Length: 154
Image (cartoon, rainbow, N blue to C red; front, side, top):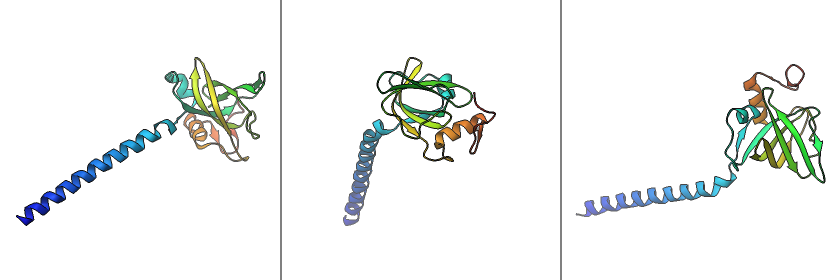
């Protein structure tokens, strides 16, 4: 009978361990759900409209001549991946390295046809472009290292 008791205890420990592991994985996923933002290119936004209020990242190259400063710290600009464009508004101070023709990533959500950003990230040196932006441009066949959009822009 001692062998049956040991086997039963092992099974109980395995079941308890499995349940505890499942609970901890669920708690971790629940805790991270607000911290996960997916990336979308302007083409992906044009193809499939995001749900209202859904937070995500959008990135691309800032279109030359699209930067407009509003009252106070309000700015608006357009980003492109070479195939589509997305208008972005932002309330705040833009990063020092932000400028037209450079790669940016913005975090926020869509409000009708405009992306309302809560955060804007810009490149940090001449050869850097955010990985998501470079990947989206490569998918379009428009990315050449160090040159941005192939063919001279939009």
